[in-house]
Length: 214
Image (cartoon, rainbow, N blue to C red):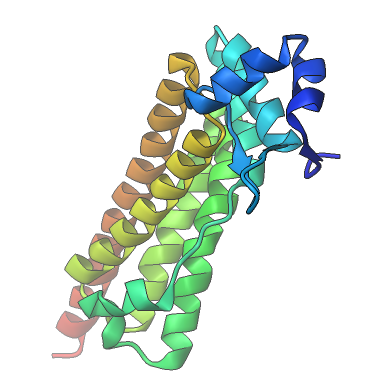
């Protein structure tokens, strides 16, 4: 049901408004709409559900439920061409490239868990991802500066994906948008801080081992 296409009249019945109202909302960008090759307006049921919930969200907890719904629709798209433009990526072998693409996609799953967890569990989730990114970067020989660049690349892709799904669903609620940005940024900040701290620990341990070997 969530992926069902609806006609203008079906949407009007679903929302309890006149078809001309749906037409005007769609043409004004207030309602998520798609056009067929013949120019007919068509609507996705899952986008309409998300839009409807966002219009009624007036509290942070309601906004969080809308964020969770949006996250379920979002798929992080990471093109090889876009990655090839990153200097750190071009120096990796095929195995390392695959590992980084997988880690980039894991950010979405981590964000979903972060959004639905309590504060302690959410912090632990972000901390684990930060350690994972640091360990991966160290394994493939990236210095801390490039490890940070790699994480920021995937962080930006994640945020762009979130913005795209919100815009495509014509979400206007300021509570929903602000809650999404606040939590996404908090999630990314915690990962980055853990990444940097993990690198510092690795380097300190390496320095101790080097000193013992003299």
